[in-house]
Image (cartoon, rainbow, N blue to C red; front, top):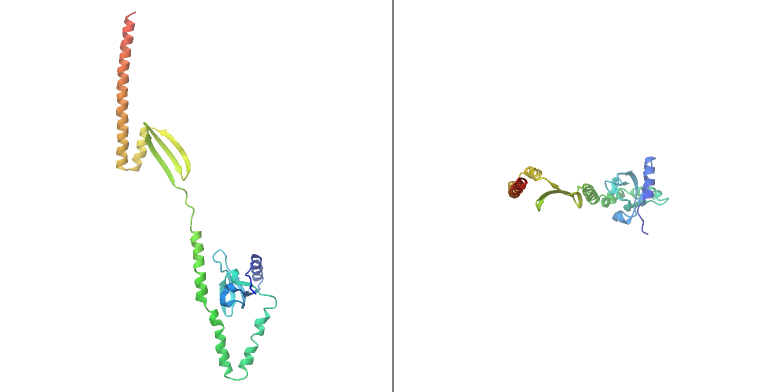
Length: 229
């Protein structure tokens, strides 16, 4: 009959029993592999956030970590079985001296498969590493983009973080645009801005000369009209 692992409530009960000084008995499930059906004692519950195998079980002379799925609460009365099993040992060793060495040889054979500690530890070591990688991922803020643009005779500045617009394009003076570009310290960009400003300056001067000429004509016409009074 398949035995299910520890539930959350059973883990809490074991934690309370350990706090009271008791060491609850558990039975290994099929998830524990070749140790299925064997009995052990829970001696400690480590931090489940650091490893899935936080249930430390004493099995023979070893104390190994397991996950809640590897063990289940031992049925009532199962704690007496380990006490009954050692009784045949003196009966086998008592009849003759040769039986004692055979029994001594059999004793290490039982824990021999249990002492596959490297396999258990190799399974336990990568799991905390995976958790550490997941926890090490910090939430980086979205990228910030500040754009200085020139179009149709106007300089504009806009700011955007990720998909969110922090500042919509607003008009700045050419002198402010030139100062912003000077902070970048890229000769090619500065030359391009200076060319744009030079072209605007030349166009503005032409317009000013044209307006001055038109104003001079208007003033001369006004002077003639005054003399005609």
